[in-house]
Length: 357
Image 1 (tube, one colour):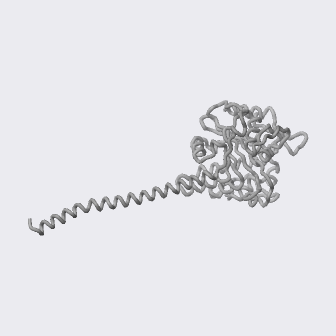
Image 2 (cartoon, helix red, strand yellow; image 1 turned 60 degrees about the vertical axis):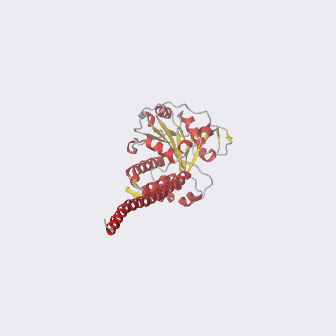
Image 3 (cartoon, one colour; image 1 turned 90 degrees about the vertical axis):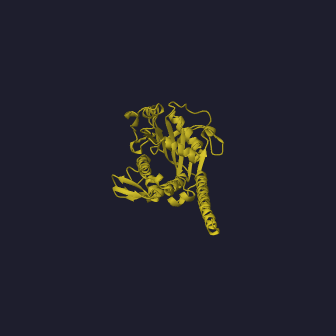
């Protein structure tokens, strides 16, 4: 072999050896870029997780209430107390053009999800209902004595959500598994993150006392108008608190249907926006007080269809001393609680409220 041939052969050998080295170098660079991207995504995911987790406040019900709680009758059934806070302080004050000290539970629903996660039932408790507040601890851990003829929504302002849970448990004999509280600022943000909620009215809403004015028919409401809608009392129906419950139930069903309809999981950015809005101003029991807790619970509830949820108002009668207040009607309320406690169908007689609203 000549020198030129040797060099060519040697050069050819070097050329053949260089190709694998080049491919390995490109592979290393690609892997490095992928690693950076993965680490970057993981860092963003960690930041997002921590941010959303930090949005959620929680309360340890067992610690706050103690051992004096109803026994769980049906192991796989779930009972969730949903509270809406009507504080007008801070961001909430801007939403309602007012600044009122303290907060009250403007909306209260006990949602029963039966064993098998099929058709759920939501029982609204009128805020003007006179009840016996049990002995319980306030937000600072101080013991408050029991008191008769207290308005239901005053329990929240005086003692906080744990005492509301204990009050509902004492009223119903039902073990409350979880509670979720959303204040109005968080509510508005969630509706806006959804792009609005569609509501259909059978008759017009007059807008009395600064409320929302709407014609009969279908409307797409943004967060601000949705807030006015669920607060409306005097501009629709008979102007009573009982009448407002119907509007709140209607809106809850519409919002749940909207959440179900939207393909949030198909868009990470949209999913994050909904999660951020949904977790802001959110307070739960300690078991739900994290993204994992909320996610696991939501996954277990996938079989529940909002369109089939039954909404019931706790049967009440007008108080004989103060006609502006209502009292729990018996035997209807007892029949209602017994059915839910034992995970049975609610009889029609248990839905008949003497005070109609």
